[in-house]
Length: 568
Image (cartoon, rainbow, N blue to C red; front, side, top):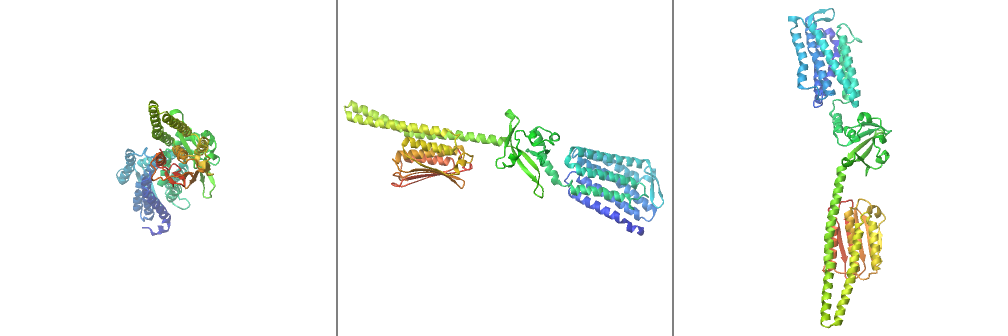
């Protein structure tokens, strides 16, 4: 060992440390495409550098020749492994198959055999000269190996250029690695002249430091071996929602594949187009920003293939909270809207069947019973006439006439109520006002109607399902019908509708004679049962408070926002 060379080996030590650190970092991320080939290339480069240090410190020519041969064994494997890395990074899972791996591994193995057996044939080196520095005399196989190595470098550069052209997000790291590749070849070419130095340093050392220093910037600065950016890109490419990135001037910067498909515009053609050019059906992007609770929707395609998409727009802000762009998501809500329409149709169908059932029960206990009573009175009048009891027959005919008039009034009221319920396009508040006014016209009984100030918005919104509005109206009509039938002529009748704590509350109050709900078993009890059933169908509750001589209060409470349990 030549101890005089110890002060000059520190650049080699620094380079060796850089290669080791990068190799460890890359090997730890072995699940990322290209990480393992890059780590193996760094291992071979570190062995190459170790051979250069050993050659520098060797005291005699024989040992220098030995360590020169040691370096050459690892030169082609470095280039081959770097080619593996580039192909795996630039063209993942495309060229780098086991067949290609085996094929590209053959030349380094042949070089190893030629180096070991060179004394037998001198195909790789014709000899060595030493004049202060070891100078090999290259044989034909050596020049072929150099040419092959340059061919691999050209393949790597071509793969990098291809990636640069087709993938904008890879361009900066690709540019850096191309510079690293070229710098490495330049310094390796300078190293062929054993006596040449650059800035007083071995070109081999400078080549390793500069080349892999540039790769370090690409690795750490652009995180090319970090799986998270790759995972994000993969998620964006595979997501079903369309994604468009705009700059602050509302010009498109990037589209994911789903957005390309939905908008029918390739990403390359869409870049630079304005919002209005890409989305003519929604020309105002500011409206999307101010409509977070209910994002606007657009239709794409036509006919049976038409789809509905919600436009969800977000600001992109930097660390200073300044807007640097916008992110648009086109979320497919077609199936959701179709499901809502089917559910609404099913609710209306179920409500119609239930309303028919309740109407049949009401007719049975009202109209049918009255018709039976009319039949009995008509038969009684006939008997009285046959037996000569004229006065009794007249009494029966008078009762028959009174019941017929009552039935006529009740039937008109039922028809009017049904017509009121069928007008579903009106809000609940408007329909209640009309039902109260109609009751006042028919009975002459005034009603004090109270509607909360904020109730109009709820009545005309989706907070109250249409089916729930229909059932509330029928409860009101049934309660007012009970007031007309059983409360006589009360001096006070009140109807109040309020909303509080996500609940809609309705109360119907009168100061009539009242009754005992626990012991009443007549038609009034049946009417209360029907109202309670209606409230339960929409997830609400109904309570009746009444005492003989102290009037009656009917209260019903139903949840808003569609959280009614059963809304049929």
